[in-house]
Image (cartoon, rainbow, N blue to C red; front, side):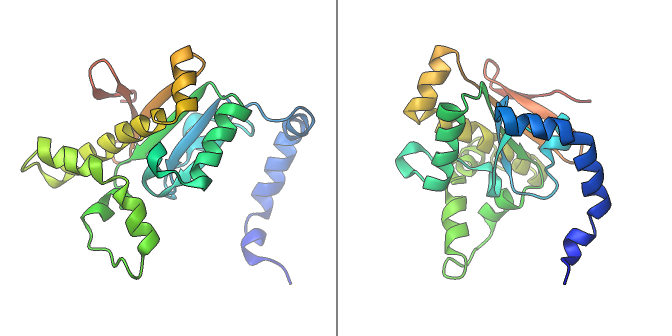
Length: 207
């Protein structure tokens, strides 16, 4: 008995294997040397390979709800193991944290989640709550869409701060071997903005 979901993508899969067979063989023979660790939301509309024109071997990937990285004082083994392997094992020169607008995780900060039914999700979203608090303190009475975008952006900045709380990442950044990037994917625009540390604002790279 076949797998109906796989059957639906047979043509695309054959085309991919035919097109990338030489590259895949090279990656097997020589190993992977990705240019960046991409940390993004698990949202199905976030498609980093398509957005960045990435090929197999270009990006080491970490995706979860609301693109969160727990600070070093609240380590989560699954997340930290990816950071360690990417930075210490693969020596990636860049880490990208990309949030996005219309993020269900960020919207979930305002929801009354049932902590008995969804304990893991509730605890996870609490890691993004400082971003919400910062925005609500600075933008009292802001329109809902302005507030949401601001929290999305602030959450990216928060995760960059959390990344720096890991000694091995901080050391690599200070030495110049590693650069951190904060991006937001504005779905409704559409376009991507990047965090400018000098101005403390997000600059739209598209449109």
